[in-house]
Length: 435
Ligand SMILES: [Zn+2]
Image 1: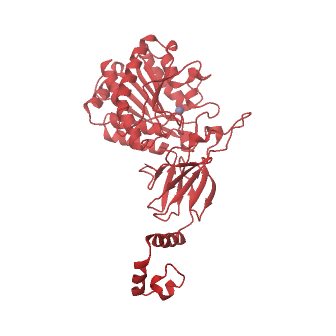
Image 2: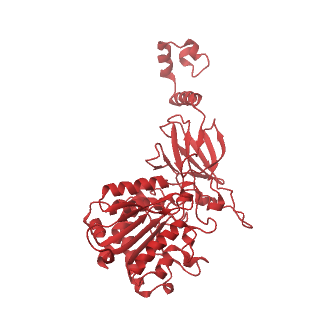
Image 3: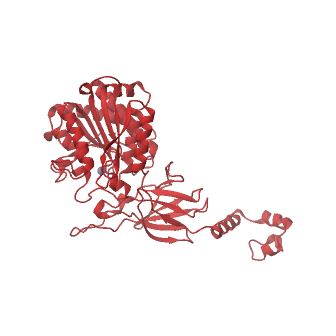
């Protein structure tokens, strides 16, 4: 009898409204779900992957249209830095269907003798970052490690989604931010640090409020993304700029007493082309602070910083990064034998103030109050690391540090990173006001 049948092939032939109602009453929920899934997959468009836009990077290994699964690796050129950044768009999603991402590490290597692929963990955040509109970025449910792959499942409600290692910020995004900040505050100006070697604009924010002469202003330099893959550091810069151009009395004090430069992306070329940047040839931006810098951004930044030093007001230099996969947020500092002792007490006070604020962010952004030290034992080019160069060549009271903000953690969203930047800016004001 029809009423007792489940999902038999004869069902459509005999179904009338009345009979369907009777049948539905007997169908289990599981069967219904299976019917919906079959219908959904039957209707689904093929999944397609796209990377023809700024900042994108992917190497597609395979697309299983039945399993609705995309196997891929990051797509960067190893000669242009660690290939751990990935960012692409998927079209053809049937809204509501699960889509699986199966990520493996890049096998790309440089042409250096005995070059090995980068360890895959650098490319594998605990959750994927994704967006339906390229504006609002979310973290997925936790990925699962399956053999050498990280497997993420997404269930978007749109037919097209962007997926990425972390929240993207491309040169176009940075240009928009700088314009937004300048529109928000009459004391903030959208400027350009320089043009890159590949001819791209390097957006910069320049902030000063009131009539105080420049030579009586504290000098503050904040830069992010000397390593292109570390997109979270640009979002920390975003938080810094949001705080700085905001309405608080503290922000107004900083604008009135300081001259502040903020560069959300230093390595615009590798960011725009979806390359990792770190250890790019001949060396990366954060090994370039020398007597003969290679990159236009370094030349321009060093020029401005040298001016501040010559005027005796290079007060606070902040270089923003993301660290290794297992690290919390922490500061990198120069070893104490390599910089004026007069700066050490100030530096430690600044770090304490920043830790006091950032470690209280809710939801939690884990932070260590123990800085890591860079010096002669850290890297052969340790003197050419930006924060080290500024610490060694700055004024007696220069505080110059690198902030590494955790990325491999569920709260490392755009809001989480922005909170770090806002608290870093507030700590900068705490520190400079009391100095
Ligand atoms: Zn870095």
